[in-house]
Image (cartoon, rainbow, N blue to C red):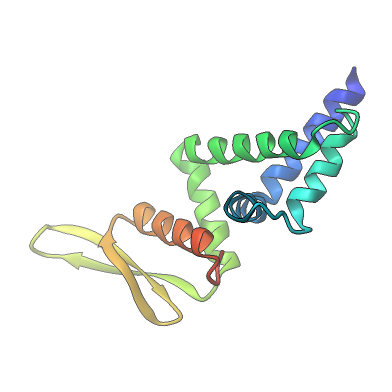
Length: 142
């Protein structure tokens, strides 16, 4: 029983560690019906260890979905850590700050390789928008 629990934990941890790559591969697989060799296949091999080689890809998909849901549903402090990790891993992105005197509020905007990107808004929202756009478009930073 502990072997199964250990294998499940290993799959869960792998999905969390490689969530961005797994999500990109999952989207590509759903859009094209072709799953390239990558992190999702690695996860499926790990899953096959405890599901007796029965539908490891679908089990891997469920781990990826859960890891993504956990990230989105996490408290802002945990999500802030993910945002910071993304910004560190993608140094061509930065956040620009300004004070809007009319609204009497701080605002942020994303910058990609020196080019302004997106709307001004709250820092969490602008980083999330850049992360989502980069992941869905396959652009640098994805």
